[in-house]
Image (cartoon, rainbow, N blue to C red):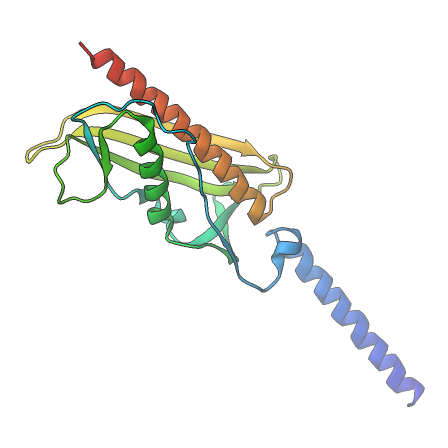
Length: 215
């Protein structure tokens, strides 16, 4: 091999190294999880113990949770600028986030004792209807802020009837969980912690509301 050929090979190796380094610096999806394989996640929370007693004749129907269009897909999303979001293409929820959040909420409230029954079937008659919207679901990866997992939800409790439903209770809750590093797995762990705290808070709010209505 001639000296000229060796120099050309070295030049190609150096250029490839520079290009690879530039691409790595441009990635914001975090550490070892930025490979090409698919990663699937679930947010699974548990209230723990079941309430010792349950009210009677208070059936709650949970409407399918509505997810803001920015976060409706199964792909995880990071906020990287004031008006800029970045999808983490290889990091996805295992199931549709609408179904996942609806099931988590139903399971939690079933254990609370605040309702005689919690259903999602529209063919079953209910006394109250709970509508929920997830308005923020992202990892905050902006340079000027510390890494956080952000979750925001709106709750609307109404009467159930054929005519106009009457609003009984409504609240909006947002939680920002600090995490050590902005990786998809850390963000999902933050969402899990945030959802547990958020559901415990809304349960307390419901309990306070119903206690004031009791004769």
